[in-house]
Length: 279
Length: 265
Image 1 (spheres, rainbow over the protein chains, first blue to last red):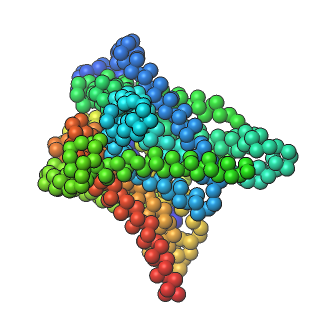
Image 2: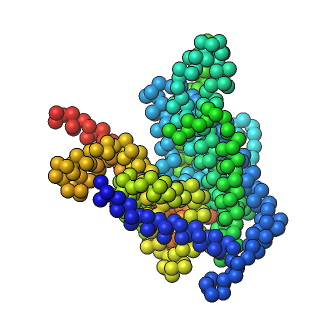
């Protein structure tokens, strides 16, 4: 069987070159100043101090985190009931609804985000419907609402699927035991179902929060050119102003912030029942 | 009574969910047939945006690049990913753990971070941005998904099977091709499908690593969406159609095969 071992070797080399080296490059650029020549390299923390001491950048960072948190919270409160309802349906119906929710995720995110540009216009379909109720027109495009909506639309399937998986994996006999012991529906939900499905919620949070913090085409398309999130700053630094050192520092700071948030989320969830996740 | 109430609630919730997910998609398809430029008022059926799209060489080039890159990236990443997964399953635990960790990096990292890493890497090597960098980048982010979907199938595989084949005189190649690969085929197929759609739909990484006029559909939609251009709707409809067909083929073929298999036996 050892003869098969070598088959992994080419990819290990590729991985070091294509995955590890680029990451090291980001770190190198983040901690050095301009001058791409190896000979003139100078280590500095300037890129970071510039980022963290600039009021404009800090407000962009705050806004990005705020949007990501709001998106994540909405995805939990929207995704949980949907996942719960689907998980309690018949096998056939489950398959159908999960397919229905998975299908759009296979379709280009940019295309689906672009679709909302038309829907959210002042004279778009939503305002047309609101007109019948005598409301509006309400300006929706190029607002925070539009950006959050676009993110929820794109990312909530991940939340639903994670929670759904956790709910269907759950041992149903726990619920029977709870009701045998006299728990009513609300109690058995709060004491049994909810804690057992938390690992799904946690991995759902990871899958929503991470792309929400770093997204740059959703704010551009639905928030308009003036709506800047941290991803847009990185895009500008790399593709317009060409300050790769500063851009790398921002990306690194963002990655670290994301890692810390993930760590905190997992720490908060130190419920002993949550350990069955690895299966 | 209580049961009926909950089922009514669940029906409404599921109905709204379907509306939420599918209205934007149907909206794009509908407006791709609009006779006017408007994105908000449907003024009559027409195919003019399709004509415009097919006549537009940048759009057709983007479609061609998207398909070519997706097919190549799928083939390369499926072959390399599968071989790597098999190799890893026979490797020492420590090696496996390290490779799996590094392999997860592109999946766990924000896409934009992977994108700028590759951008700087290619430029450090002096590789010209274009088709080659786009393909390399796509292969890079597709392989981890193939490995992730093949590995569980290998884990549930009886490790003695390949040994048995070797004992019975099969060459390692035969054991691999005739014993291991057929057993893990479902994992390989789903890995290939994920790779194809990941590549076909990719925007962020492609946007950073491409250049010299090599665009894919996503990049084109992004750059064109700044102005009203209903050809984007036609292009988007084409994308939706293509992906739906691919998904249908992948889901329907096993069913047909199964039926045929039943007829034979």
